[in-house]
Image 1 (cartoon, rainbow, N blue to C red):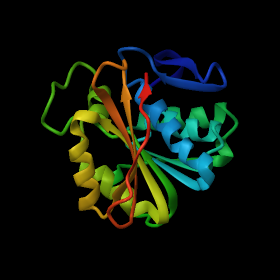
Image 2 (image 1 turned 30 degrees about the vertical axis):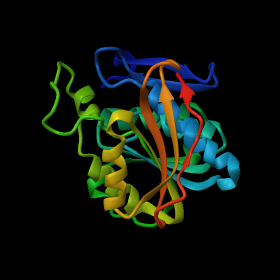
Image 3 (image 1 turned 90 degrees about the vertical axis):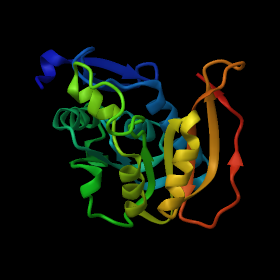
Image 4 (image 1 turned 135 degrees about the vertical axis):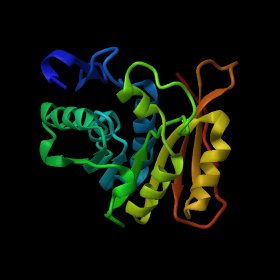
Length: 227
């Protein structure tokens, strides 16, 4: 990717955070779900759980990790992204916001991560479409960001999670049972849940879930958000 010709210069949080991302039609662009996830994870940090090291799995250009740094929810971040173009933009975004010393980008597939027990916070906006479902479309990078095996991301989150750490995912509300069962398959139990609705009278669109390596029970269902 040529960053000068195929990326747009945008901002988050009313101009407070600079964000370079693929131009429309050339790659996967940041959506509101990433920002909701960052807000949800930061909400936990404001309750006295600021992360020393936060890992963003499938980070794309880094919107969730940037949100955590902006909210002072993490001292440092590690962004894991397999797409080389998105990873390059993530590096550029950390530098553009003055956070190069507080962030590291790993150009890697989450399935190949060897690190373990290193993160007190793991955030993930995983692909919503299982492999083999949905149409590929005309932009391969965008399809690759949308399609993937949920279990690989949950397994990676469990692997890098430190003792007493927490994992935060965003996932379609109609598929919440799939997420919760996948968490349990990998030794994680949901402890905090918040639904997001487009309108008060509409069914929930996505769910935000915080999980820990802990015993079952103690799930707190928080008031909904509306986007």
